[in-house]
Length: 71
Image 1 (tube, rainbow, N blue to C red):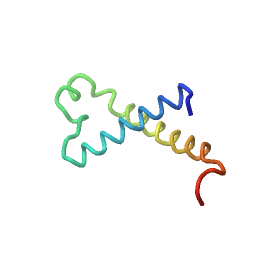
Image 2: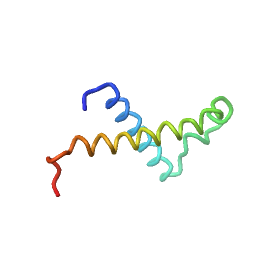
Image 3: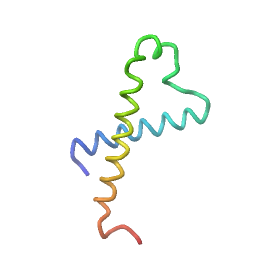
C-alpha cells in the first residue's frame, strides 16, 4: 500500500488512534479552548473524515492480506 491514498489513510488512522489514546488518559484535544473557539465548526467533519479513514484502512488491510493472512 504505497499509494498516496494509502499513506493518507495510515496517517489519519494513526492520528485518530493517538487522539483516542489521549482521551483515555483524560486529555481531549477537541475540547481544548483554542479548538472550541477557533475550530468548533470543523469538529463534526473531522469525526467523519477519521471514520472514513478507519473504514478505508480496514478495507485496504483486508485486500492486502489476501491469501497471506493466517486463518
